[in-house]
Length: 417
Image (cartoon, rainbow, N blue to C red; front, side, top):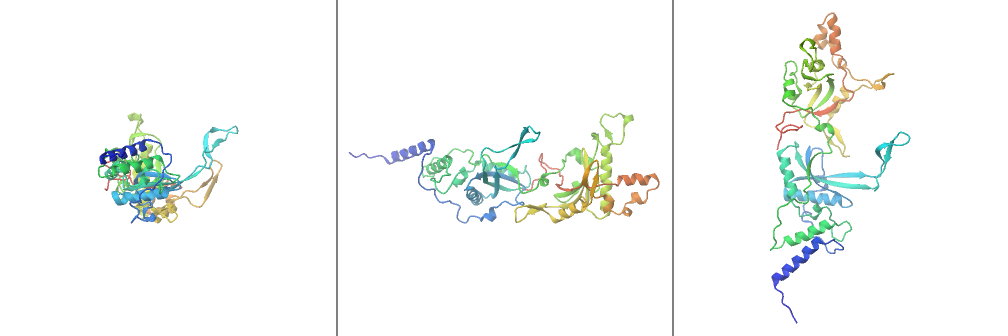
């Protein structure tokens, strides 16, 4: 006895069968995935590799780990570039869980406890990141983040598993379900899925890990601090006017008390008003900058609520990553660090032990170039010598130039989309 089944009924039966498969655990699967649609004409691995200049802010779209992590990451990055016109990159990272870690508390000998991971292994991970954004608050960055959260790349790799075939040991239930889901909704009579977050819904904005921490550090600059730096005598060669993005901090003068404004210390009456330590710090910074400028150095001063800085140089880049994937500072920055950093001489004392010897201002600037010293007489000479007895930091540090920004919390300046 023969049965004739209506064609539409057959289609419905097929879809129901596949829907059941989506809801049941994966036991054994045979067959093959379709060839990767972006394999042809895909960028080379080197072109996809993240570099220091690809940033400084990026969107971390997806991460992978395991034997197939590199292939998964490169396929996803290539597809994001080709189909979604996004500047995608890959970054490798090795996680070593075989080493001892410092634990909480101390042992019976008073030493900090040492602990080991229960699952000791070394994991090679790869991340897919999308750049390049000047600021964490960039409109381009936030728009791209929203886009990434809702797109669904065609590559099965985006689901988090994805070897070449579903029979591979590393295949996951989620990847196979995505494979079946694509099979259902790619037909002529397919019903469109409702709009929802895609496989990269957990994406977030992050810093470029290849850049040093100094790249993102800058003194806070708000209206009050900006006003401090506009006062007469402290606005000359202001760091706010520095044309570059980065500079090198060579010395910090710190005040010993908290003040509401320079020259007026909190809690003092009119009769008890004294010169604020912040005033002293600001004056020494201003004098140091003027002396360095006379000696031919590109020096800048900056003052905030608790301290004053003196910096040298103006740079638009901190440096680049070398062939070994290590960050190397710009040669100009290295020269400044060496010039103003500690000398090779070692100082020994009972109080502090063995310490490096700092470089002094009067070692780098000829006293004859400082009018306050050449024109002073009597007791004033000692006073002015004390003010110009400046010891530079043992290790000058590169830093970002502070900028006023329309975006709250931005450290790297205005948005340049």
